[in-house]
Image (cartoon, rainbow, N blue to C red; front, side, top):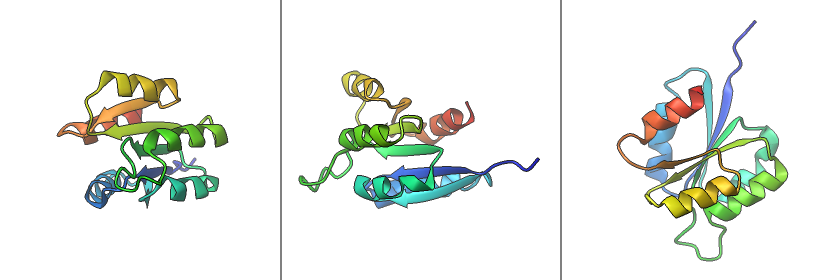
Length: 125
């Protein structure tokens, strides 16, 4: 039986982070990656049925009219409560981490030197 590829959405308005994470994830031939710079783009593409969404907590912080990561998380969960969402954030804040878990995120990963390793581990579990 062939091994199924895994579709991973990366949703981050920081192009450097998105590109680096995408390049890293693509090292595993089972990972297919799609990058979105806004949460709204991600929502429009949920019909592609991603296995995992890696979502930036401070998404769209420069555009005050756009939805942030927490709002997008809530919207994703209303559409597809089963999709696994990993929140990615530069903020080492227990309260924010707990808030995202309570809203349906599977995990909260801090953007640091170990973030990619933690994401790899989460994808394999």
